[in-house]
Length: 322
Image 1 (cartoon, rainbow, N blue to C red):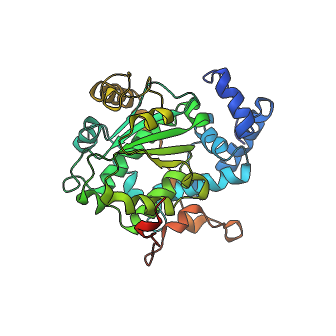
Image 2: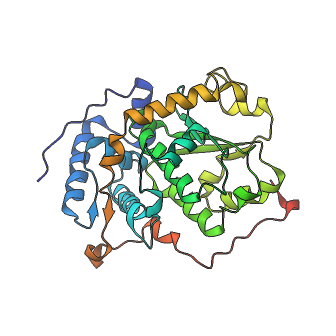
Image 3: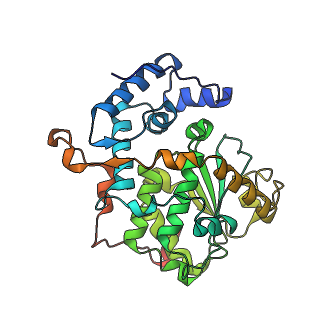
């Protein structure tokens, strides 16, 4: 039996503790008991190989609002996506190496930049750009770096509780970027990003979305749940609209903010990733052994819905746009 472990939530401020209690059903009086039960379940189910420390397991419990069954399903889907050759996309989670030139190049190009300051709701604000050449960087590499960044973000319990909100700068996007997004790839991306990974998706704000990308925007929203769909908006190039959604104090100067330049903020984030390289090593052993899973325990994981080679996406005519 696993050894009892008392979790200390000192890393959470009072705002986050209250939010966890109200929105995520997190009761400090019961948390340790639930954590221990979840830990024992993980260790007893040999078809899943994953970490069992508090910080890791809390990601799944908080994302599942402390429903043990939902947390178990989410962990299974997570392990499947990271390791299963049929139902997952293991190539997105391999070679998580901060010495890889491709990783460094994408980080230096400000592909994924979490900002130091949170918004008024405690959410982590992340700027993503298309500032790379799709002819030279594969989609697998792009997703690999994105998930490396997310894995570091999820170490922070404030982010586990308050979630992540994105600013997607589309000003660098061109037709070559569209080639990445086949319907199958889009479905994998959206489901992994919003439904399978243990992070609270709090919305996406599109900036300078080109007209030619309008249909792609609709397709991305199509694959989302109705709840997530309502959290995706396009601001065009309107600074006033952007600043109503995200505070100027948190944003880089390039977006009318006061938090510093993208180059400065990009360097700060890269240093943060270097400080936490051990996190990548700790996740290398995550695995899902389908053959070892008892049939009676089979449930349809979110990851299994990744497989759909004949996927057809209904796209609204331009006259029916939002």
